[in-house]
Image (cartoon, rainbow, N blue to C red; front, side, top):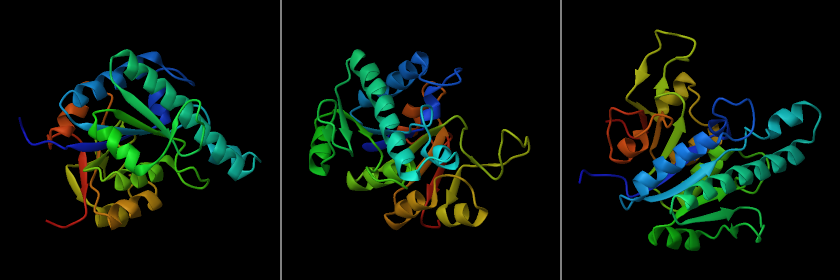
Length: 241
């Protein structure tokens, strides 16, 4: 078998679960993501997932409409738990053993996040879903993904989007946008490309954690990225070649 990543963290946005709907969770998208994750998990790849909550609630938006920012962010964390529970159910129905770990204690539905326990779950072949962000306001789920990836010593962060990589401008608005196959972190910052928020990006840079941005909605793409197919997505590296 071709060389592949052994331990990954997959970052999904809450909006990814919308599908064709305007709000909530599309069952078809849940099934698609569960199928993609199962496909790579069966290759003995250790899989962890962080999913946002933007399809249900966005703390920043609530704050701009007069809501207290901290209150809004905690509501956003709870939204990530709803999405995480939905994804857990979709995976379990496909026979994939999972563990949901929360940064906020809620023992009835999830384990508290403990780094050593998380690593042990991965070693036993269980898919881990990390919910509730970092457990602190003012931090995005991108930052939570970077933090958890570093803590579990993931080989790579796979940022699943609806776009097939990083472009020099918005490909949905500019037909002449140029896609990068590989780009350095410094160039991402210089060009002010929106890959992750600055806190998340800095965490990855300081710990040399590679990031791959790819279209997760296309069947088979997750498996190709895990198998290091460089034709899929854009890889962010930290050392100039």
